[in-house]
Length: 299
Image (cartoon, rainbow, N blue to C red; front, top):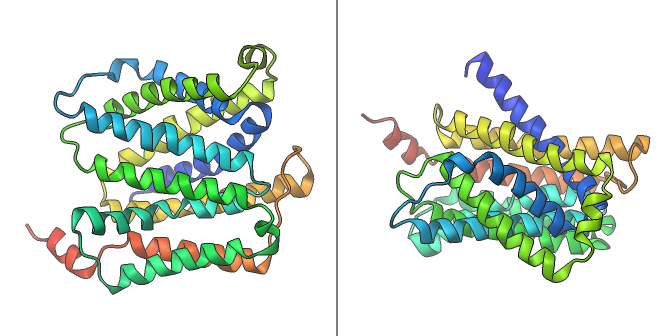
């Protein structure tokens, strides 16, 4: 990998790692659905030029946008809002990869070998260890929402595999636009005083919205999609496992120095062991089987 691409990988992980922090700050400043709505509004406005009709594929795009956009991020921000610890949310969200693998076996008839089965077992085993860690056991609301966020993004990937000739930012534009409408409706129904909250929001609150939108999308997603056009997906995705690790480290630093209220991150042996076990499992699932590598390298 070239030096510039290594720099891009590090930038992606740093952006996503910090986006966890800004998102946690955001849901302390705003209700979770309102915060997510405004994040997608910014992205939707920026990507208006990419909003195009793709005949015969709009149903799949709609499902992907609702599941992988609105529902996924709604559960993600609810997880952060209902959890004291970013570590539990960051680790559990990684289960989207093994969830997607299991669903592809069930619904797409894909075949996986023993190595990926081992990876799936390790990933879920690590999360089980986390759940029974006393500090996180008392904080399971965020874990459950994170599980639903991981499952929703995994289901959306099944429909994403059906898309043909839909460019990255074309899809991102629809995800942002539909998610904005979907989440705005939910916020209107279940949350209150949205206008007052927006008009009286602090600089920190607005900074959290803007940073989450730009860091996660402009740096994170753009850089990620750039890399997967140059390298195999199986080589790039394991490198993004650094993002949740950075998120946990950032949360620990903020908690230790009391930079911002609402961060009470702790690190125990069980959390370290469970997280390491889960990350290892996810990395194994992301790796290609030897047979796949042989096929992909043939002319």
